[in-house]
Image (cartoon, rainbow, N blue to C red):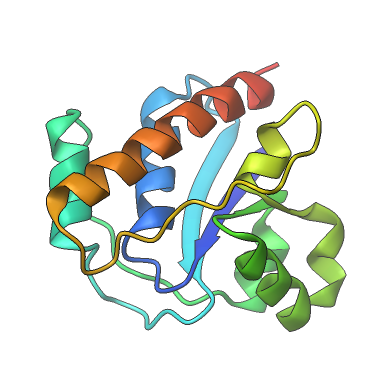
Length: 149
C-alpha cells in the first residue's frame, strides 16, 4: 500500500486539485490519496474555481480541507508538497518525516529538480485555476506512472 499526501498552504486549491487528479488517473487499489495544508483550517470546501476547473475535466470534488497533523504525516508513505516552502514547513513541523517529503516536481523529475513550484491560484479568476490544474496534470501523469510501476 502506498499512501500519498499532497500538501499546500490552505488545502483549498492546489493540494485538493492534485488529490482529485491522482485519484482520477490511478488504476491501483494499492494507492491511497489525501491532502492537507500547513496553515489549513479543517472543514472548508475547496475553492469554487478549483471545483469548477476540475468539473470541466469531468473530475468531481467534494473536498473538505484538513490541517496537516502528525497523524497524517505518519500515515503517508510519501508527502508531496506544492512548493519548496511547503516542503520546508513540513520538515520544520515534523522533522522525522523529512526523508519522505519532496516537492511534487522534485519527486517526478528524473534529475531531482525541485525548482518548479506550483503557483497558487487562490483568489484568482477561473483561467488561473485552469492553468494551475494544467500544470498539475503534467506532474500527476508522471507521478501516476512512477507509483504504478
